[in-house]
Amino acid sequence: MQAGYQLDDTIIAPSTPSGQGALALIRLTGPKSIEWTEHLLGHQKLSSAASHTAHFGLLKRKDGSIVDEVVITVFKGPHSYTRQDVIEISCHGSDFIVQEILNLYFDLGARMAEGGEFTLRAYMNGQLDLSQAEAVADLIAAESQKAHELALNQLRGGFSKEIEKLRTQLIDFASLIELELDFGEEDVEFADRSALTQTVEHIQSLIQKLIDSFQMGNAVKKGISTVIAGRPNAGKSTLLNALLQEERAIVSEIEGTTRDTIEESIVIEGVQFRLIDTAGLREAADQIEAIGVQKTYEKIEQAGLVLFVFDAARTSAQQLEEDIAPFINQKYGLILIANKTDLLKDQQALHPLSALSAEVPFLKLSAATHEGLQELHDTLIQVSNLKQLGNQQAIVTNSRHYEALVKAHEDLHRVLQGLSGGVTSDFVAMDIRQALYHLGSITGEISTDDLLGNIFGKFCIGK
Image (cartoon, rainbow, N blue to C red; front, top):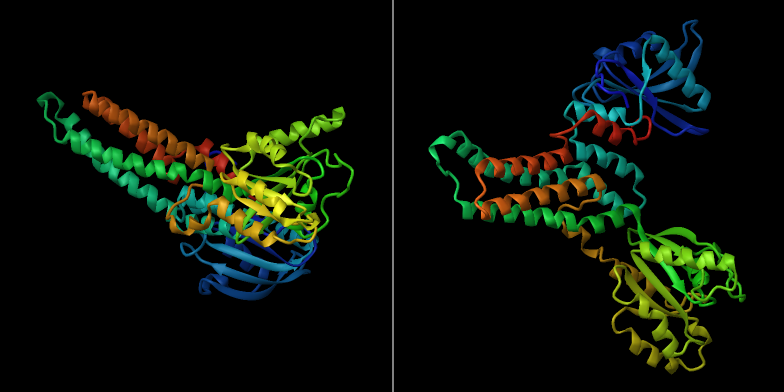
């Protein structure tokens, strides 16, 4: 991403991925977009056409030969995505045709857009704030209904409004402190310190709620890391295959078949779970298996959920109690699964095992026959704690936003210390300015070229 961010040139890029397809879309924006397109069409006057209208035409080379039949859609600034004139060209989906059209515009002076440059222009021209611009990338990358909902809410300004409320309250507070500084020589206090303390504590509590929401938001955005763990031959790989409804993992009666982790994703009720099948937990028989067991423990440490699977037909209550002890009261959620119930001769044999599971959800299922699988689906949603997602107005999904909120929270903590310790107004004001700076960096009231380059440089070309 170039420093300086020139807005007066015309940029172009394909907005659909490379590869053979029925149609492809090419976008260009900038002051010459309409003029150059009129020139290439030969006779159609797009400059006098209404905005948001589509026009059929033939794009031609200098020698008059036709490149392709196209549909041109005209979006006139400021009523466009970038608030500049925008042209979208729908052509046939041949890589050759796309490149030929790009070359036509390159010859006229257009340049290839960099990653995210269309959205960068939307931000620079005031169409989107910075958090909304980042939501565009999240919306494109969304792989589940919940991730889509969160990104769409942020794109429509839901998160920005929450940040703006916090900044407004803090600015009102800061104005009183700044007023005191203007009259510093007269030793005047315009602000009631106890009332200010209550205001800052309130703002700080709202910021803390947003900070606390990040774990949930990050899980929705990236999917919940769900490790399937247990002893060898407990049926972990069979359970993975059952959840995926395909034969993804090799299943064998030979213990220790799974040596490395296998990772796949499923979506249940709009929530994505990243399933990780792991090597069986036991004292390794060889060096390769030892590496697999070590990887299992590493994945468990990083997990959001652990499905501990045991063989209901062969596991004693004492052995189970010993096996699950290290998994109780950890940072991740835990579901205890008694597998292979189809092999039990006496269903009563599960009763003493269920007594051990008072602290965690306990399910009985057969991965081989899929009996009990729906109950596992329901429990995954319940344990993930995402049912209440729609009730929260703002969820933090972006690590940059999270870090800025943490810093703002720390700034306000220093403000409270200053107010309670009788610190002079100039030091209190300095901490308030820092909090405002960090909150402003989220939506782009405060930004730098390096920050913008880092954000928009990660976008796909053409967006």
